[in-house]
Length: 157
Image (cartoon, rainbow, N blue to C red; front, side, top):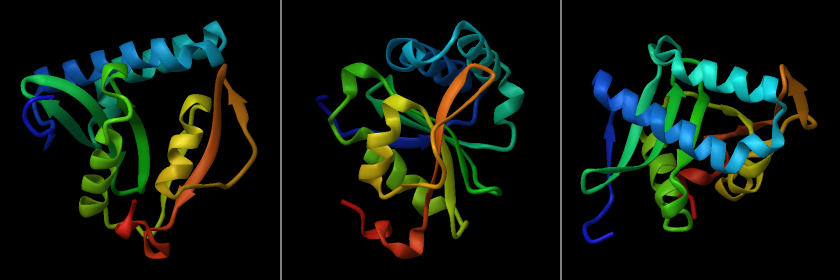
């Protein structure tokens, strides 16, 4: 990373296609091992249908022209739809930067996510708490979690 990472709202179809590509690649690398084939197919079918992002705010983290991370949020419902950082950019603060930017935009008093097993510890570090036990639906394994902005992480790590 030679220049600072910049966070931008993704507004174009081309930008959304690149975001979906990053999500797919990262999912297959880090999350798919926890899922059945049904779960993999369900997840990939969901992200490939860009209509699922029509009411979302999709943030991209860019290193120059390279897309390094994506955070898609249904701001009206206060729910994180997808949150992925390319593996070559892990542990560089990109996820935290995306999350901070999302907090600036979201008006919800509670933010929820269905966290994949790989991501639960990351969400815990961001201030999320489990709201239920790990679940499996349509082959997808996730832990329901929530974050209460007024409880503190606007002054996040």
